[in-house]
Amino acid sequence: MFGRVRRRLADLRIATKIVSVSLVVTAVFTASGVVGLVNLQRLVDEQDRQYRVNVVALDRMTTVRSAVGAQLEAVLAYILSEPGFYRDTYAEIITESDRDIDARIGELRAMALPQSERSGLKAFSATITMWRTARQAALDAADAGDQQKAAQVVLVRSEAIARAVKDRANSFLDQLVEAVADGARQAKANGVRNSRFTAALLGVGALTGLLLAVLTARAISRPLREVVDVLARVARGDLSRRVELDRGDEVGQMGRSLNETLGVLRAAFEEVHHRASHDGLTGLANRALLRERIAAARPNAAGGRPVAILLIDLDGFKQVNDAYGHNAGDYLLTVVAERLQAGIRSADTVARLGGDEFAVLLDGVDSAEDVYLIADRLCTDLQEPAVYRDSCVITPRASIGVSVWDGEVPIDALMHDADQAMYAAKTGGKGRVVHA
Picture 1 (tube, helix red, strand yellow):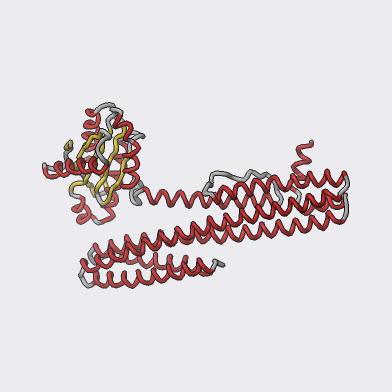
Picture 2 (tube, rainbow, N blue to C red):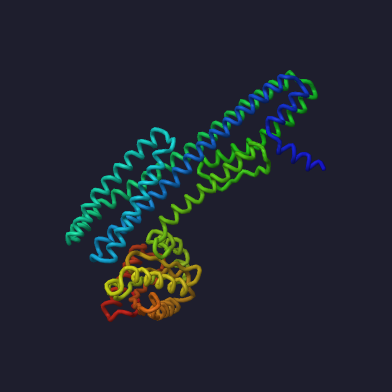
C-alpha cells in the first residue's frame, strides 16, 4: 500500500509536488516551487537540445566518413578495372556515395552547430571538393587508358582525405564529450543553488513545512545527484554507468533521454574501435590487432607453451580476379577466412594482413608438433573447391610459412621468419607448408 502511494507520488510532476507543499505552508513555498520547476525544465530542454544536436552530428559525420571510405575503394577499383560492366558498376557506386555525402553534409549545415564546428565543417567540405577534383582527374586518366597516372593521383590524395575525415570525426567526438561535460557542470551548479534555496525556506518555515520540504528535496535531489554523477563520469570518458530512475516526471524523462544518448555514444565508440581493428571485407582482425594479440601471447611463449605464426598467401589469386572478376575474388577471400576460422581454437586469432595474405596466431598449443599438424590441416582444408554463383568452381591453393616463437625475439623478427618460410613455400612449388 505504502509502496503504491510512493510510486504515484514519484510519478507526479515536480510542479504538483512543490505546489502541494506550498499550499500546506505558505504562498512563499508556491513561488519557490515555480522558480525551481522553471529552472529544472530549462536545464532539461538545454541538455536535450545539446544531446540531440551532438548525437545527430556524430551519426551524420560517421556516415560521411564511411561513404568517403567506400568511394576511395570504388575509385581504385574503377581505375584497376577494364571498361565494361565492372567499371560501370564502380561508377554508379561513386555517384551514389557522392549523393550520400552531399546529403549528410547538407544535414550538418542545417543543424544549429556552434561556430567552431561550422568552421570545421566548412574546411572539411573544402577538402571534399579538393578530393573530387583530384578524383575526376584520376577517372579521366583511367578513361584515357593511363591507369598508372590515375593510380598515382588517387594514392597521393587518398591519404590526405582519409586523415582529414578521421581528424574531423575525432573533433566531433571531442566536442560532444565537452558538451556533455558542460551539461554536468551546469547541472551541478543548479543543484547547489536549489539546495541553498531550500535551506533558506527551511529557516522560515514551521515544523510541518520543514518536514514536507525535506521530503520534497529528497524526492528531487537524489535523482538529480545520480544524473550529475553519471554526467561527471561521462566527462571523464566512462560510458558504463546508467541512470536508474523508474519514474514519470521530468527527472525520469531526463534520465531516459540521457540513457538513450549514452547508448548511441557507446555504439558509436564500439563501431569506431571495431573499424580500426578489423578488416572490412572478412571481419577478421587486421595487422594492428594481430600484433596486440601476439604481444599478449608472450607469457605463453616464454613459459614453454608453443606460440606460432602461420603466414598464408593464396596462390593464383590474381588469376581468379582476371578470370571471374573482383566479386569472385572477394568471395574467395571470405571463403578462406571462414575456413581458417573453422580450423582453429577460440584462443587463436585469424587476421587478414591485406590483399590475399592472411595470418594465424596459435596461442599456447600443446607442442611444436601440434603446430605443424595444424598448419598441414589448414593447408589441406583451404584446397577444398568452392562454388561461386552455383556454377563456377574455384579451387583455392595456399602457401604457408610457419614460425614458432619463444617469446624472446621481437615481433617483427617473428613475422619476418614466417614471411621467409612462406616465400620458400611459394618458390618451392606452392600449395605447401614450410617451417622457419
